[in-house]
Image (cartoon, rainbow, N blue to C red; front, side, top):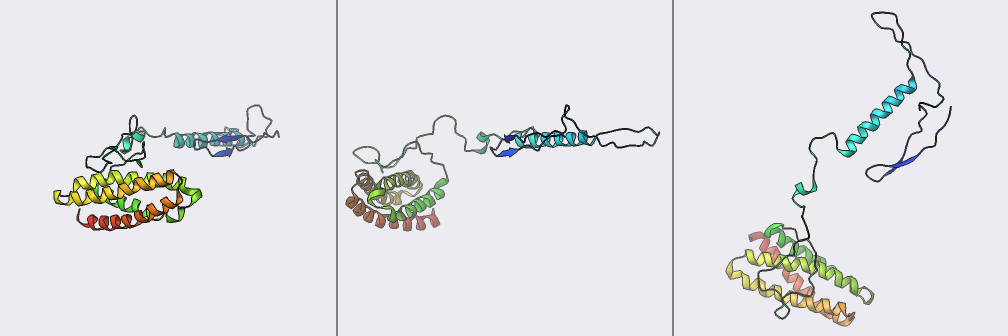
Length: 232
């Protein structure tokens, strides 16, 4: 019997597989196993081929697998834009409505642009401020001369979330609590800018000094967010 080389293929998920050797091709030399089938209405016999049966089963299996992989078995096709997180066009630039930007520049130097800010509600923003503050506290071991570039990148990422989430939280609290939160935010963000500048200039001594001040502020913010989460 003629043998055929196993050919590698790639399915829709990018997983490399190998086809089972096909020996039942039309032009291939094959040995037929004859089977006699006797009907109830007569004694006529039919001859069939085991090879043709196997080929039919293989074709049916491949067809079913194709339907399952391509989703053609369903009239409804799930689209990414149906899940609530699909965005048409460029990412929207978040803005702030409270006075937490640098008065001289009108923004903050640490803000990372083209960063998607998912709207997770006020309680979600409180939790995200707390988590991002914790993540920055865990960055202490990263502050070294040869890793200042990573310190700056991580700082910008986490501080950007804290910045815009703080604005949402300040907008949601009662009027008599807004000023206290605004002062806390500006104090923290002023320090973030100093830390970002020190790490950008590769000044290890200034980076360590600013980070030590930042640690104290971050702990205060975490305590405040823990308290607010129970009442907001």
